[in-house]
Image (tube, rainbow over all chains, first blue to last red):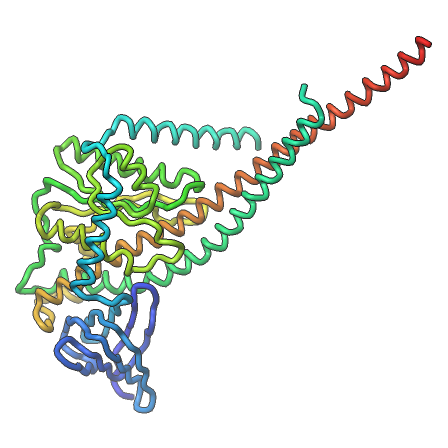
Length: 140
Length: 287
């Protein structure tokens, strides 16, 4: 039997593939890499493209990734696939939006956190919850 | 004593409330199952990326990333994950209490805070009481995607890069089981590595492509994002579970109330009949 290597392909929102394979071919940042068992440890970013998993001489599975990370340990390959399209500009845009929302929210805020008020309100809410719990217990 | 008609209208109104709470309970139950599935689905990624980070902590890279190194703390960032909607018991209240305790400790040791809120409830709470909110996101819906979280995570990471904050925390509810949700605070930055793996104790390092700095930047950013995503998904499962329990209690309480009112109604009815009878009998005797 040929040597095999354990392959895991996951994305943040689902597990895509997990199993043994003879070889993995992935679109690394600087060109395609083919990974066989006992490859040296490698860490690289992935471009958009196909990941080919050769399970044995006949079988081959192909997965599309839009980008992500590839980690290789001598007996293990891990592909962390992105679910979202990533680009520096896009990320910046999203960050800007989040900031703007915060500013909108805070148009008439106090600068310092009012602990006394917040804690008083929380204490009251918790006391209410506790009272409800007790009431329920008594009824039982 | 209330008359029969008054009690009857009260009963009908409670019954209609009970219908609503029952419907909400069932909706929450089905949503909770889906949220739990989503939580389970996102776990492999979190586990894998944590393993990679663990390996990385034992490698001996020529480039040490700032995310992996602690520094003196003068300002912290806190991401607070809350729900968008209420009617879920004490879930948010307990969460804010935990957040507040830590914030108080920081304040006492003269550490400033930057807040980032996810979900409507946290935004409202911290707007009312002040606090420096630097980023905000709400209305993630029932199926939050990582894409929607990139922005706020980016804001916090930028702040860390620019040394505006020296530590980053996330506060969220951990899903223990349907009945128990535990609010916790977790440190994101600097990254705390897992227990050392003995097989990796020897001196080694990765090959990096294109170079270690770029690869580590990309990897660590994804790691933080995945942790935040995980906490959002977990908090969502907590929300639905908590709402289910709260609505179940509400329906039960409504049932009890109806029973009591029904009893009162029957008594009132009986009293009215008895009174009428005695009046008739009295009237007949007088004739």
